[in-house]
Image (cartoon, rainbow, N blue to C red; front, side):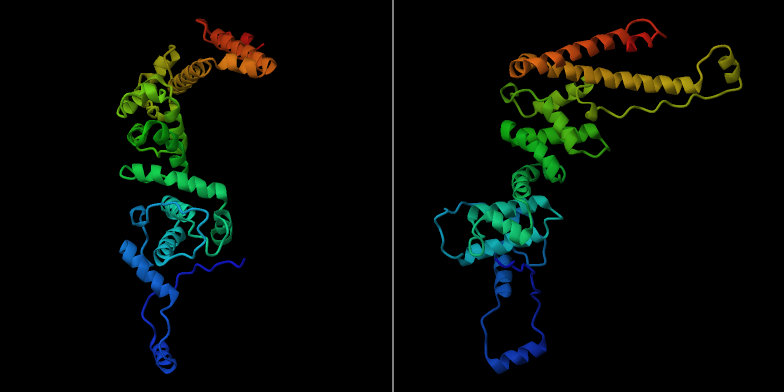
Amino acid sequence: MSRRSLALPSTRSTEPDDVDAERETGPEEEPAAARSAGVVASLTGADLSTPLTVAQLPTPYDVAETVTAPLNDQERGYLDVCEQALHGFRKSVIVAGKALEVISRGRLYRETHATFVEYLDDVWEIRKSQAYRMIEAWPVAAAVSPIGDINEGQARELRPVLKDYGQEAAVALYREVKELRGDRRVTAADLAEARAVLPPPKQLARPDQVRDVLTVAAAEGRVPRLAPPEPKVPAQAVDEHQTDRDDEGGVSQDQVDEGAEAIATLEAAVAQQRQIYDRVGGGVLAAALLYDPGRGDHLRRELRQYAQRTAYRARDTSGDQGADDA
């Protein structure tokens, strides 16, 4: 099947030479592009050169597989609107996601393609998996858009929250992560870490409890990515007696820096230990042993071995670290 051309022509007025030619040959039917421009304007209040918003796209609806009739004027208008949105999907995959859902569920591709997948491949060169990720992402992104625009990866991490906990909880989670991150950019990994500490949906009585859950988790170190950045240790003022104190056994600046880095390392290790403690609970070991007894027992022994090694290194002595590496 030949590739369909989706280049949208200009809707500006016809040049004088074209007008003279029309007068000589008689009136012709209005070009399809001009009709599409009129439909787009009537549906959205925008011309073909104006970027569309999610609100300007039609609501997705279902058309039965048995329907083979050509598109009516309204459906062609929907297709024009959705394809206009798709032309700008590099700027907003969220808008494109809704456009794809309208085309898919309404089967607006049926005049030129047998299936939605064929339409995606032939017209837009989009993989099926990518298209459906975009379709799943747009409702989440639209929900949190008053707080800030999110990308497809961030929407993918929020979608389970919206599905299992509701829209208010998803918005609350994004808002709290954004607040905890401060000036740092919110990433999909941040949202995934925050989602992992949420209690089961039945234990979350109100959406606003998400804030409390994340605040406590951040304070306890269970969400290291959301912890505040480590404060910089101010350089100690060096006076005329500093050299004398160093010679007498005082603490040098290098030792201060090394100590601050060591504290940060220990804090990160404690946070990881807490995460390990949480993750191996709830019957995880029992399920692993049932699924693969040999591999499960090996992992359990390694877990205990490294826990013992960590405890040995954390003993209340100093300077004897070489022995525990044996």
